[in-house]
Image (cartoon, rainbow, N blue to C red; front, side):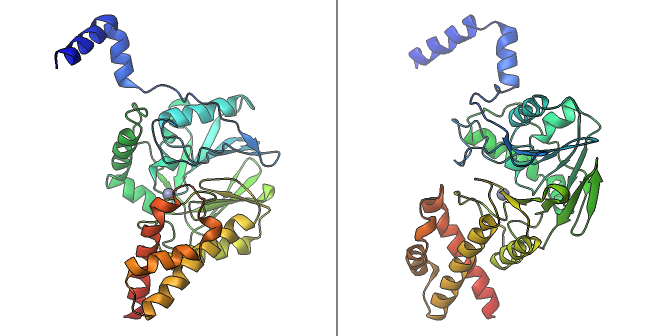
Length: 321
Ligand SMILES: [Zn+2]
């Protein structure tokens, strides 16, 4: 106890008051170097770490992206914190002097949109677009809940992040033209969440999947739907885009959507079959895992697969009644 007091006392005396106030106000910039990968002449993706948000990655683990247009820059998923948003802005400024004029948020999970704060601070007129269910969910407090989670997981690294969410609703079938690029919006009911949009940048033929597909990382599924994910991914494949950007993990071609569709379909079919054999979800889990060899090395697989099986079980059970 005495030792702890001595340590606290020394820190207080060493830090000038203004610096300690500054430290408690805002977490430091992202320490690691990230790069903006060029997907087409106008589309860049910053592929974040695929690990869970934590101390090491300072909470950054999604795929923020931006599109250069004649009217300015459009950001898709500005990232997990004000610090991530500032890193995204740095990458944009290295390529163009144009302002950010709009952002799209793929869904309500805060790791994808809390970076909007940095965009708004730099460009107050930027338009922030998202599905209406994101807007209402944030109004109901989901943004603050995400900040609390991220503060805990990063041990305070995202300090200074506040809720700056999209306020312009967009929905399935909408098409927004900005500076010669068309942003076509696709939404197919509850999939990863109830608020997912997939954004197709038509002229560049790049489809942003949000977390309807992940690559090399098995993320959260709570609140999602297997049948909904299958519908969303089937739609994504039908769009027949050249490039597919997942919410987490590497960008690729159509196989990114096809592979995640195969994963969710396999889980669902095995659970359905074994449910009909009267097994419990606890008994079904190891049987499912045996069928998932090609995904077992994905980040978060061991930790997350149980939730996927439980959710599939609930959906199969609902269908049975
Ligand atoms: Zn998500």
